Image 1 (cartoon, rainbow, N blue to C red):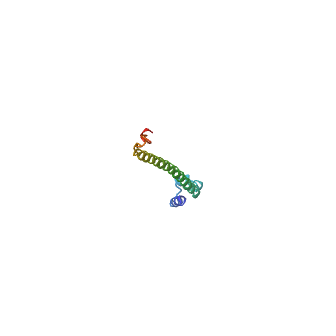
Image 2: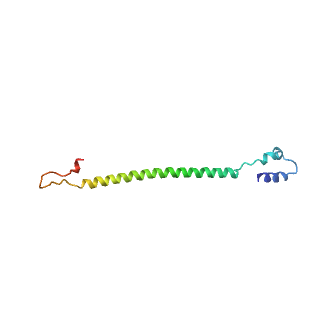
Image 3: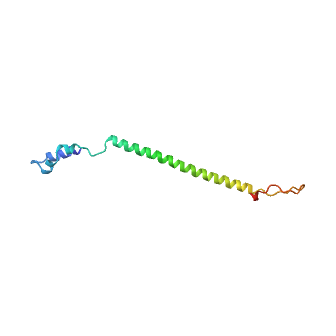
Length: 102
């Protein structure tokens, strides 16, 4: 597109301008923009990168949730076991299980 604009400007001069004569047709034919293949490749790389980041994020969150769940289960178990008291059997005089000594 830039080639056509440049040709239009140069055709407006009566005499050949030095700027117009400096650029030949081969310099204007090369495209400096992104091709469709390059754009698709960039989108593909971004898409793959996002998938890899999502997988890593899910692993981190799952490990964090697992650690939190294990900690809560351990806390509830300790709390439940600490509610047991030492019972004494009146007939034999023996103590039953003492959870505090664990």
